[in-house]
Image 1 (cartoon, rainbow, N blue to C red):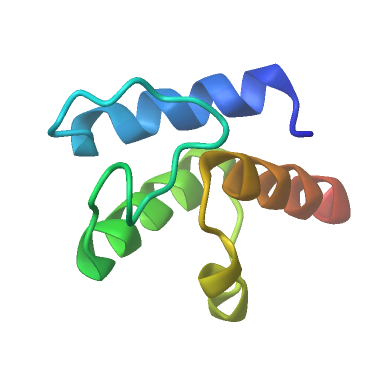
Image 2 (image 1 turned 45 degrees about the vertical axis):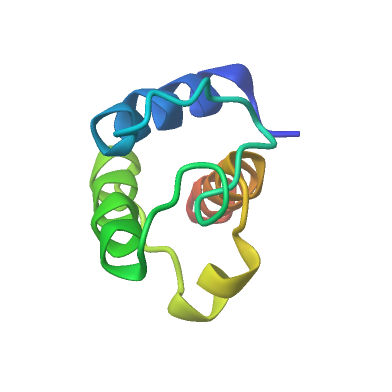
Length: 82
């Protein structure tokens, strides 16, 4: 499980994209719960990359369905770059 600080930062980054005001949780999905289209997801990914100063490989994106998946990936990339 990703650390709480990473999750909270990602929640903050998602907030402007959360047009329906869905309550965010680790298991919240981008496509089903938040109803984000692929272009919006790419905008969000860019925000996350800028915030954490990382690059999320495009081949990982199809596997990142929930906020927890993204937070775990961010923590792993940050640790690997550390």
